[in-house]
Image (cartoon, rainbow, N blue to C red; front, top):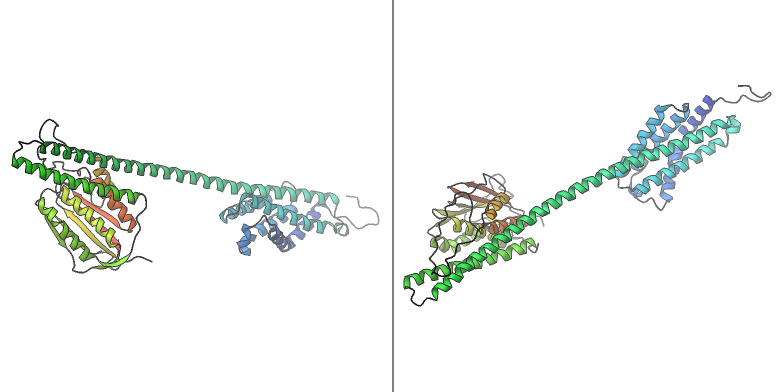
Length: 437
């Protein structure tokens, strides 16, 4: 280059780039401080105010270093630009993780651009003394604008991609929740369908028995059979209506847990004594086994309702042998769990050892069917209590098991089911010994 006569040598392009880069590199801390002040003063940028300084600065100092190195290289050199883009990408990731919105991310880069340009113009104001060529300054300005624009693009794109992935995940979660809701509604519809079947069946029997009792010439022994059948079906109707009411209240979320100390042994033994006449009427033995005292914390009423539903089901669907209600400390966690179990010698069902209760409910619900009723034009005969089905429960049990499941959810209890076809079933309930208040 031909220098003007009598003047100091003018720096070449390469030297000018090096001086600009060195100045910006040495000014990194000052630029970051000015940027932090600008962010704090901007009323639109609120999320970053709760971040520690290191997290707020994030990749900004590294990115400024990459900018300085990029300015030191000839235009078109990709290495430093690529590093700056990586830092900008990571900045977008960090801002998304800390809950910034997209507008804040873009505004932060606008503030940084302003601070960077201000520092560069401070340097450019002394360029005459440094005798830098004006076109080198113009070139640097264009490079800075391009680097900021590219960085903002990389940061925003990364943020947008993460937000899109999050939205897609939310859609998948919502879809899964809707599928679960549909399944729950189908199960609920099956339970109500079963209840309607049982109600119609029992009402049909009551109607036919009442019709039979209207015969004036009915023999005394037949009349006694009809009365027994009528009382049995009226009792079944009463229990079924109670179950439907309980299930509706549980499904509506109206049940709350009321925790108090109580003696589980006394409560369960008393329940067994109350239900022993029901078992005796069906020629079944009903025994209770467990320690004389078992003091726990919990909801005594709901615990008793769980045991009562399981016992009534076991008595109702067991035709020979007996039923046992046992209780005690949980073997694996005696300090914080206790358990009770209902064992019967009924027909069992296809649930398998330890199968989830919902499987048992499904088996019982699918088995729902109406009780047969005698023809209207003939006096009804007493119906047999026998059930020859070896692997499924009778109609009506699904509601009782659904109530057990809902009550266990309220009490943070777990249910274990072990059933063997033609041998019997065990329902084991495991409950906390105490609840956090």
